[in-house]
Length: 408
Image (cartoon, rainbow, N blue to C red; front, side):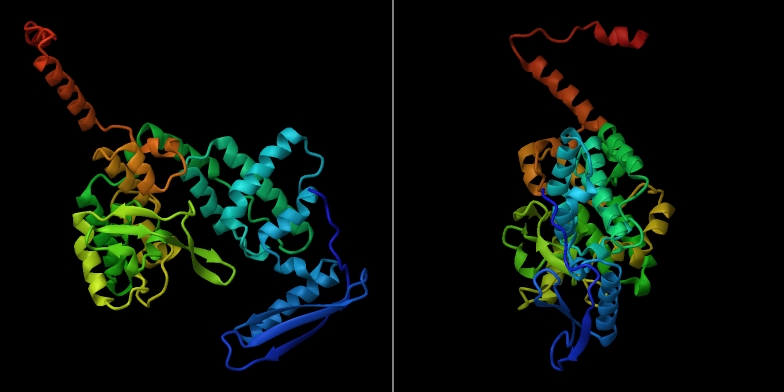
């Protein structure tokens, strides 16, 4: 990836703010400069909702230009910035190191965070993205290499003066990975045990929320019973629900973007169909009744009609306090999805069907949920015994077995 020197460097900028009434973003901030290379006059502009936001944007550009930074770099997305400065970020590394780093950048960093401006990549965004990689079954070395390239790109942004601290230098991801590995040995350790436990959690969250908003209980119940991510639940529209067959066509998810929260394609970039079990049909039907004749309306919103995120759900319901009081200290919002997939696997949903419902890219990820519980193992033993006993070609079990067991 060839390095392209970014111009202009340390140029004088002229700036202005134009007020354009009647527009959604009425304040347009603009900077102009003479490119020292081409000698042409160049400009960069961006619209804002308030004059203060416009001034803040201008101040950032003026400050960057004064320090010798390309004015356009402050507005570049992470993908644009990283692709341009990757050679600086990965100096002198051997191909055996560079190749997995670039693979992590292309396959995981850019799809998850590449759309964000460099200055909007926060510690929280990196934390949630890293956990998503772990939860989706990425290997330890894969996560390590992906974080390594992100750290180096953001470190270059620190050196360029675009940001003051590196948000990718996170701690504790190894512990989260260990939890995921423990989950492989005991997948139920991070899942609610049954319907009663889910209802207990939903009720407690509602009771702890401001004005006891019942919608939080519906969101939690729906997420667990459909094995969906909170962002996907937030993206449900009335028109996505087929009440004849009780199928939800999952087409979008709610995700952070440069202009705030926005609906985007699903993580796998394809729509998938999710069954709506009988237990949640009444709450879905009631919400659709209220929103009749509004096919594009969101089925689930916050108390003021806003979009729901995992952070909003956590703060609005005092999630951490509630799960601690119920004895579920391990439970995270993403574990509602894990709960649903574990229940489906225990119910005998075939592997290939479970993969389509979950939207997993590979069967390997889905297989994590197929660890049988004790009841299933005992049932399997009884099934085998019944098969052997009824088979005419095989002798019945030894009659002396009962006596032997009594002596043990």
